Length: 140
Image (tube, rainbow, N blue to C red; front, side):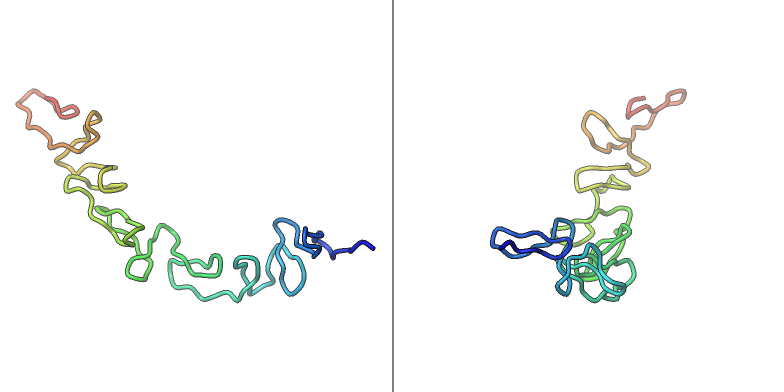
């Protein structure tokens, strides 16, 4: 005699009914979304938590959102002259000649008195040009 599984389920290799892909078990039924007031966490629905500012509730926990990062257990925006280091969960200073950086070695924007040298991929100090000369990529 063949087993018949409820809606949105199929018979798994061990003979039990399993939810079809994109559906998950909630209170014995396969559903593809949670009832109001609940959120999906893994393969079930849980009570939504009240997250603090700059956080959203994802996969059963509050996470930083909107360009903020977890620093000292709160979500913050790293200052312009820093970048976020996920290993240390901290904002790290850019190189001294960078105004904006992606990481310790990559400047997105040089400070005013520097120019970006494409050959070396570094911010280098501007030269002072004489009268009637213009500075172009560090060359008068």
